[in-house]
Amino acid sequence: MDPEKIIVCRCEDVTLADIRRAIYELGYTTYDEVKRYTRAGMGPCGGKTCRPIILKELARYWKTTPDKVPMRATMIRPPMKNITFATAVEVESDE
Picture (cartoon, rainbow, N blue to C red):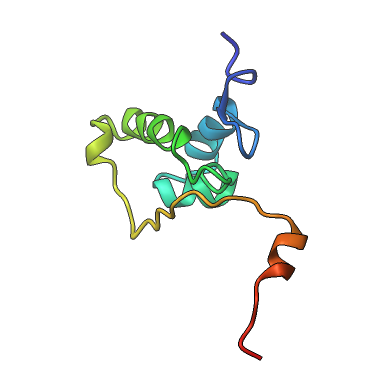
């Protein structure tokens, strides 16, 4: 299958080709670098589906297993829920 058509991150519409380009052509070789360059993992799901795929691609580059991929202090945030502006306005304040 064509890597251009394989969606790795559905939230940010990042393809496998985008991930591979970041790693092999641009030299981003840590999860954080790939995430910052491609925005994969920065959507509402927080990388729940794309993080393992990115780590697998990086493991291929490093010739290791995904759990041994060099990582910096990656901040994994829980998924957030979108709310409407009207809901935010309804919140009472102490003023």
